[in-house]
Image (cartoon, rainbow, N blue to C red; front, side, top):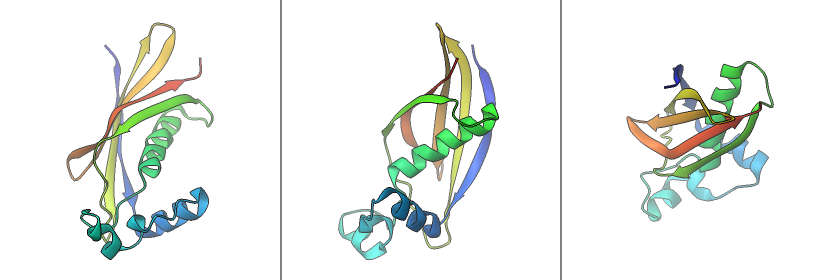
Length: 126
């Protein structure tokens, strides 16, 4: 059995998405233009999946207390994170445990009560 980590809520704004697009080079308009997002069946602007996963990695590193401790992280993108003009809240929680020789944090990431990343695990440096 593992150790439950304190949940944390991250506020995601459209300005965050613009900054992430500039840093990542992912300028897909579904992340910045409601009309384009709706034209492809989305509820409006959505967060980049990798941005959402980066929030989970940040959560783990902040829990560990020092940078560079996430060795691997992986997830399945299960639902989009809608970001209305007023912003969105993404909640991250986790369970820390040893799995053999590995230190692993299994994570849950939700928005509006729905899980947005599946099978999300981070392996930490020994």
